[in-house]
Structure formats: C-alpha cells, structure tokens
Image 1: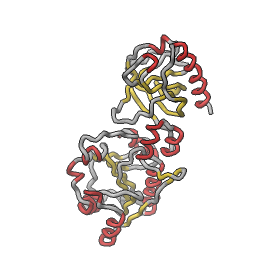
Image 2: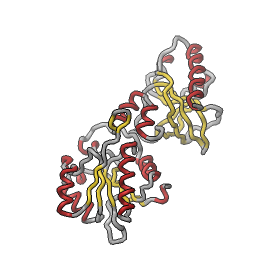
Image 3: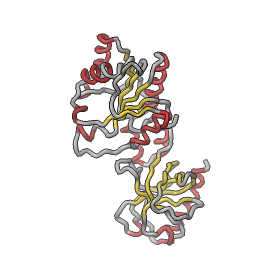
Image 4: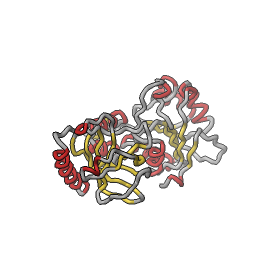
Length: 314
C-alpha cells in the first residue's frame, strides 16, 4: 500500500457516521518492528471481523521529550519512515499526533471517553502486552478491561513477540544498533535498517587513497546512527541501487576528531554533492581502528571491499 492510499490525520477525527466500526491501536511504534507488526496484524484482523476500518494512533515526536524535557531523543524511524512502514503493512488510517503537555496530562479515562469513544467511536481497541496510555500510564490492560465492561467496547491484548528468547522492543533495538549488530537488528525489525541523508563536502581523502567516498549528513538529527565501524551497505541514489562499503567514525589514522559517515559506492564515480541518498545496512565488517600508515589503511580497505562484496552477494 502506498502512502498516497492512506488517510493521514493530525488529530483524532470526529466520526460523523462515515467511519464504520473503527478498530484502534495506540502507541509510539518507533521502529515498526516485529512486535509492532504483530499488533498491526491483529488490528487488521479485528477490523475485518467488524467490517470496519483500522486506525493507528501514534505520535510525531517521542512522548519522552515532553514528559522528561531535555532528554535525548534517539529515533529508530523518522516520522516519514514510520508512516511508510505502517502503510506498507496495510494500515489505511494513521493519526499522527503531536505529543504535547496537554496530551500528557489527559487521564486514561479522558482519553478513552472523550477521544477514542466520544470522538472516534471506536468499536474495539488493540494494545500491546505492556502498553499503557494516559497520565502516569494508568490506562493499562486491567484499567481498560474495567472500562470496557461499562461501555461495551472490546479490548484485545496482543502477547509479547520474542526472538531468540528476547522480547522484541524498541529499547532492545536501540541497544543492538549501538552495538552495530545489524543481522540482529534486521531480525528484530523484520527489514534492514536504513539512513537517508544529503551528500556534503568532505576532505577528499578517500579519493586520494583511491577509494572516493560520499560524505553523508543524515536528514534527521534524531535518527540513530549505528556503532562506529565499517559496514556493507546498499546505496539508493538517483533511483538506482548500488553496493557499497560504509565507514562510520573519526578517521583515527589521520587524527580525526569529528564523526563522519562516508560511503564508497561500487561502480559509481559521479558528482553527487547536495543530492539525497539512502543507505541500507547489510552487515558490519569490522570496528574502526587506527593504522600505522596510509598504505596499511589502503590494504585494509581492499580487504573490506572484498568482504562487503561477499556480504552483499550472500
């Protein structure tokens, strides 16, 4: 399903009778990972059972930035990526709220009665195994079930999704990204991790070494950058996909101090300054380290390129 076929709302819509039997789920859904996908699958199943419409209510900004002002926001997916991932799963209606102090101060009963029931007219609510909404997270499963008995609204709780013995969560994903464990990240996400950004001017050292690189500035400053190291990646540029090897780090061989994201695109040597590209991570090759000389670095880069090609063609 393309983004053009979805209805995107910036507030919970007032149901004038045109929305039939809405089935709702609520959450931040950062990553839209395999645990989230299980919730979405249940949402779509329940909406079909009611011959109704599925609604995902989520947020443009992370609630933590409002509840704990000054906290660092590290997003697995940008707003656009989250919207695209939900649309690809088959969600037709996405409510992308701005999480504000007013939203944070809503009690669970206010959110339930005034918005989910009073405004949208929800027929059923689907929630994750550990989800809670409303002020102080009081709207947990027991609270919802008690409210449902009085209102007749159905409540479905989706059990935990586990991979290799670990409960899938955004927290676990962030930890694996910080470790550069991209194979594990892919299992948890259900897809490969990606970063989009603009090509900016670098110091040109890659070209001097015989491996020209594009320096990438991520489009979103809140997007998580995987651990420092060398990676095998696919690169989407100008509507085409190329293989590549990516270095995230500080160029310690040349006493660098600023972190950079540099990609050598296989079979591509055009001027792309100022253009947008996407990096899709396939696997980590090695940690970044300091070499004794530029020649030693070039020898390692040759090995890295061979390893990247091997991973990409696996």
